[in-house]
Structure formats: structure tokens, C-alpha cells
Length: 149
Image 1 (spheres, rainbow, N blue to C red):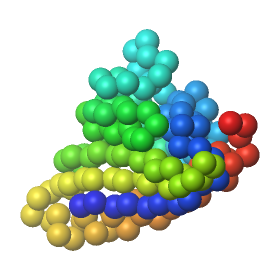
Image 2 (image 1 turned 180 degrees about the horizontal axis):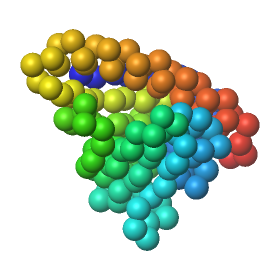
Image 3 (image 1 turned 90 degrees about the vertical axis):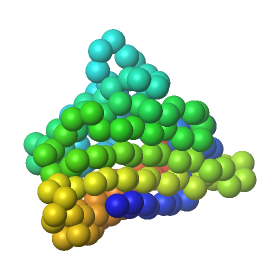
Image 4 (image 1 turned 180 degrees about the vertical axis):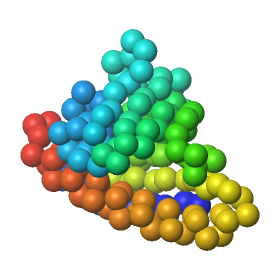
């Protein structure tokens, strides 16, 4: 299942890309998470770098960057996470709209378990994800627009 939300943010794409991928500042805006950091010795995202995220409910997701292309997009794929997710991937996309505005799109792709109940479980998970993604993107927009370029 695919879930996507977007917003127009009054900042250049380059600025927004790096703000969105800064794990040292992630918790300044992402109140869904209780903990977020890159694993190993990485200080910045790159293909192959893993990240650790624990939400406020205690659920942990470890993901690996499969694409990292400033300033247009970054994508991760789950390497471990909640049992209910068989597969999970997330993407940030940034499209410039003039000099000082950017369309930011946040996309999740996932498959739920068990397969026999996927028809029932995925729409529920998708609805919860969409709500949380909208809140997170709105928080990112508000926070990012207050940051210096």
C-alpha cells in the first residue's frame, strides 16, 4: 500500500532537504518520535547508512538509505521493525516551486502481515500513517519556515 502527503513550504529545496535529513535536529520538529539517530559512525545520510527511530509508543524501526540525492529526494527501506510490517519504505521528495518555495512530499510504501488479513490490516495502518504523516509534515513545515537558510 502507498500513502502520500504533501505541502508547500516557503524555503528552497536545498535547505529543506538537509533540514529533513538532519538526525541531530530531528526531534526539534518530529514529535511523533522519542528517539532518532544514525547508526554506526555516520553523521549524515548516504546510501547504505542506517537510521534508528523509536516512536513515542515504543515501536522501533531501523532503516537503511537506498537513495540519497540532494536536493531532490532521500529514500529508506526497513531492515527491522514492528512484526505487523512485512515491508516498509519511506521517501522524502522536494520539488522547487520558484526560488523560495518547495513542494515537499512524504511517501510511505508498506506491506502488512499476515498476508491473509492484508486486505483488512493495510487500510487501517494506512489511515493511521496518513494522519501521522500529515501532522509530521505540518510540524516540519512550521519548524523549517522559522529556520535560517
